[in-house]
Length: 288
Image 1 (cartoon, rainbow, N blue to C red):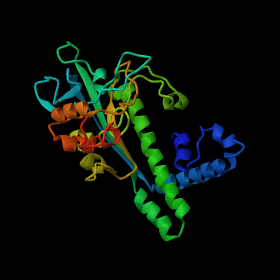
Image 2 (spheres, rainbow, N blue to C red):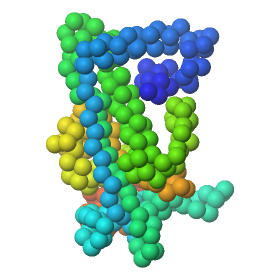
Image 3 (cartoon, rainbow, N blue to C red):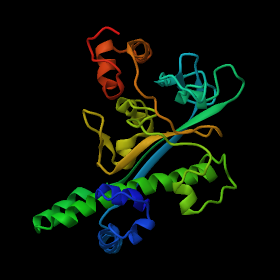
Image 4 (cartoon, rainbow, N blue to C red):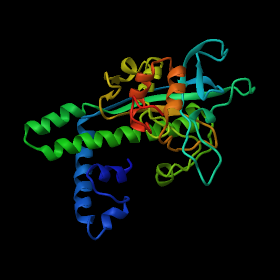
């Protein structure tokens, strides 16, 4: 569990474990930490939450238009879908490179047989029921705590699954030996970006790989109409193994890139603007 983000959820900023000794925030943080661990003990003893996950590794190649082609099998003759990634646009002073996630997959025709991973995990099966039980008892504090812990357990599950992916399931870093501190500091090779976050801000991309993962049947994770995951305490995304892969922010984009994305995603400009609403550098309907 990354306890730093547990405290953020309670609107207490500061790194764990240092936050526990903070002269201003330490007392409150310490009480939350103690209560959280007591609840975790109850969850474990009573098997009150269930964690499910599913993952897949598929042959893949990047294309010149910043997309990632995902193939059905190693013959690479049958395409399942394409992920239209977005490239950074804002002018940089320190580097001449503008990233897109497709940079971290070997190009078509390169002679390199590359792969991409997809995953979906949840630590929240039973969380709504547990929270509702506390609410019925008038214990709002414990109801909120249960949901926050479920979120942290889902993120912890993703961390564990990523470690197993690197060391054995995919196995591109079989000799990796990292402690929890280094794991949480992302000292390993590869990344696991999630749709809706800065490198890949389009939540709708989950609809590309959820059928491949059989996420609902295999793990009990479904998507709402607005592409949010249920149970809410769930995490999904991609695994990239490229040794130079890194996290970054796409940033704001203009109309030309929206038009390009719409063409690759085979959707209207209006639908593209809707999907990309959080990163548009202009008002929809405006000329560039």
